Image 1 (cartoon, helix red, strand yellow):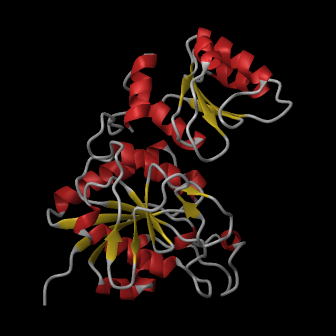
Image 2 (cartoon, helix red, strand yellow; image 1 turned 120 degrees about the horizontal axis):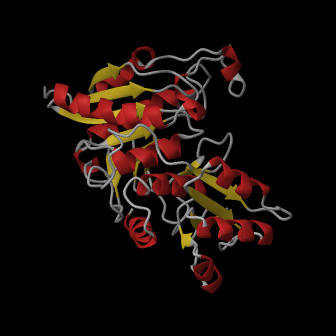
Image 3 (cartoon, helix red, strand yellow; image 1 turned 90 degrees about the vertical axis):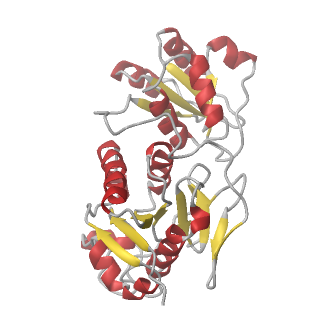
Length: 333
């Protein structure tokens, strides 16, 4: 019998690691304040060991809104360490809460430096609930990470039998199991019962072949998001500039423009040296750099959601603050 592929499972917490007060506690389980670490979750769904020789890696167990730069950096370094300690490692799975999963997946897609597949996985129902999706999502993430076909596709996201590119996927529903979608382009493939199958590849540049390296950084430059809504008077934009933002993402009305008061404040911010990039709150589609934006000195975020544009701009600012370079970066990643 051939040896099973070796897959590391790193736990960061989230719903997939949560234990509620009973089988029907599928919404307020966080009040129970009980989360499993990776080894305990793997033991709970012990059948996943049929698919791989699993290395459970201790990390932390927290709600995903708690995850930020220090954890992203630590995850990148942990991935580095694992491939050195286990030269035969086939892939890495990262357990994560769904609230900020797409942000962690995207920053890893831009900064992780290992060649093996990295798959970020969560669940919509806690591990303790009746008909939880935690066990099957974990199994399918392990299978995907072990698949030779997953190499070279960048960081992947796995939920609900679907394999998504980290750049494109976003959470679209509060409770539904099919919450993660890639609105403009769809899935890369599926984790079916008999096989892991892929049907397309991302064309934008992905890890490990990127120009960003967060392993030696102490922090990311501050980048904030200004959300467009009727009646906004520019107060949020002024506050971000006053607080020292190096960049601001304008999550504008579709197809991509700020309200009048915000626009004037953001135009002044550009003149003061802040990088302002126009995105859209629509959740899908590119923004267009028309005359008004060009005259104001705004850049555009292509089709990235505001939360992902914020991540890429922060990383871009660790490389260059030149508008032409930032535009190049947004067309590359």
